[in-house]
Image (cartoon, rainbow, N blue to C red; front, side, top):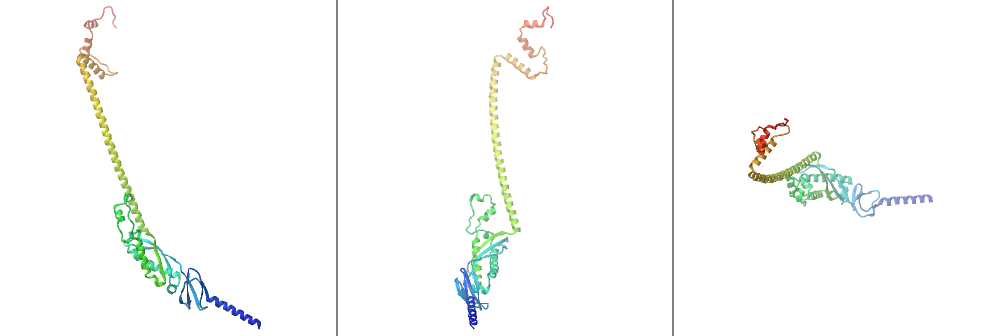
Length: 333
């Protein structure tokens, strides 16, 4: 009898402990909960951390994050307004603001991620396809550099850089965020922020861009080579001009010196000729013979030549007669 009473008391204690355990739940900091009875939410969401009560066995607790959650969309190939196909990779931060509405519409974080994929991808596609590529890349407050930074850029590219844009990347991002916020609250979600993480050309367009970049670099290199060749030709032309001027000046000075020397020589020759014309004529005749002969030549002179006449005049007549008649008793050599 006593054993049965003790067993009943122990059984009741165990049942009471089980009932008490199933009627209490603990909510951690940074989490929120919603009580569900027979699959339907009951009451408002619980957001305060601590120990809370629910009906045992018939009610369940669904716990969700109250902190910021991350959404990373898959990169999408989207055409811009100018028909350039680009890869757009976006990311967002969101939180659950109404656990009851969240549970009724998406049930879990995986369902919310799937719903965000549909909504955000659609809004991003609409905004990107209605915007120019330069607007997606550049900020509206960006200013083109001045001075030496633009010296190597083609004129058409320079005009594109200096073109003012009505919408920049920040404005497009804000528009995407605003449009998405109009749809997302019905799921008990708050979209906190959205950013374009990366923009890139698709492979086919990227190759064309690389080819254009290469052609621009080649054109700039050709321009540098042309300018260098022009500078080289200008330097060589200046050098040739200065060289001709130096040669001309030197030649003129040589001619002046030679002319002055010739004038002095002519004057000296004239004075010498005027003092003794016959002697001058004799010297000139000797010089002419010297210039016209060489070691391998033999000069034959007749007795009536001009040179022989000078020799005859240089020897007295008695000596000339002696030279013509041999002395008696002397052997012929």
